[in-house]
Image 1 (spheres, helix red, strand yellow):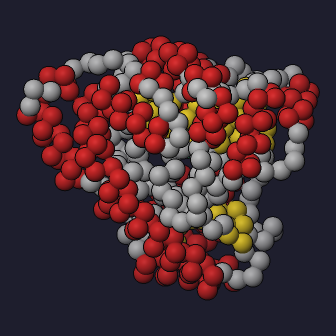
Image 2 (cartoon, helix red, strand yellow):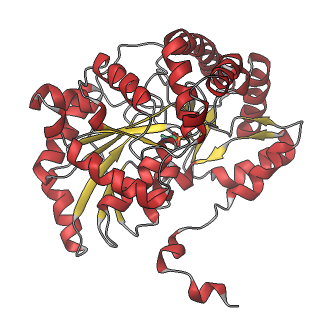
Image 3 (cartoon, helix red, strand yellow):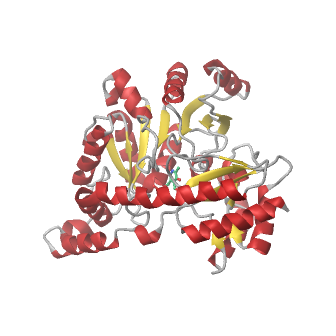
Length: 401
Ligand SMILES: Cc1ncc(COP(=O)(O)O)c(C=O)c1O
């Protein structure tokens, strides 16, 4: 069977990353890894989930928990999320929320909803690799979204028209972005909304890390700024993607989309066709644990991750040679390094794994145009102080060489 011949054209855009092979080495115990962008498993509220699952399965909710359920998602969970959204300046009700299997599924559905082959998606250069992966299946063209520059709305429309395309949405992770750790300030968020209004396109706001702010002043979510202007979520063009992965558990795969009810209704149809609904029992367990301890648990996460971020920034200051620059994130899990132009971070990773036993993610994969060869992402979420000190010392040594 010649499989390549029967695959749909979209598969040409869905390639395994070349760095995946290298990162397989991470399983070796002597590697210090700053590569994985994942929560520290030692911080999972395992006891609370043990009690929640046990309560659900031993009580009168057991049958519902193991049964099919509605595509929209478990109503008490949607109500809890609506309360949280309102507290963050985004008043809404359950009809504005669809539960998804992680926010990754929300990105896939939004790509499916909005992109025909050749349409233009505006994304950051760099942007979340998983968003590019999700959108790539719908065969878009990309243009560089840069709301903190003076690029005009017309220039985006002109570039798309020149490529016989049309701009369909702008995607951004506005708080402590993956991979850069950067946050869009209020002015840039306002400009992004102006751009979206002029082009008459939706904004996809990826809020995966929004709860993990360690210092600085919180900037209102883009959806909150827009509701501030329109007064009504059902008139909003921003589609907010939230997730419990970075706060409670990524393994339970529970996220959500919040936006104008007519869009949510279309997404519900999509979910019906794709997987009927997200895991019933997992949604119930998340609802139980979130309503019991979300705030206190996340406060503890913030304390731990903040100290790791501080260790990493401090170690970078002491060990990086001149010519290396890095971001100073106010939250999230990532610091983004820019090396002198002649260096290639993929080559550096190969050397680093061989001679220093330190892992990171080379930046190129986060750029839709394949640029960014001299950039790399470090994650501080899973490393302790000693590992950070040792790993950054070794990386500094290698760069100096
Ligand atoms: C920016 C961003 N968005 C979305 C996701 C997807 O997360 P999940 O599907 O677990 O909610 C991730 C995961 O790392 C991420 O970094």
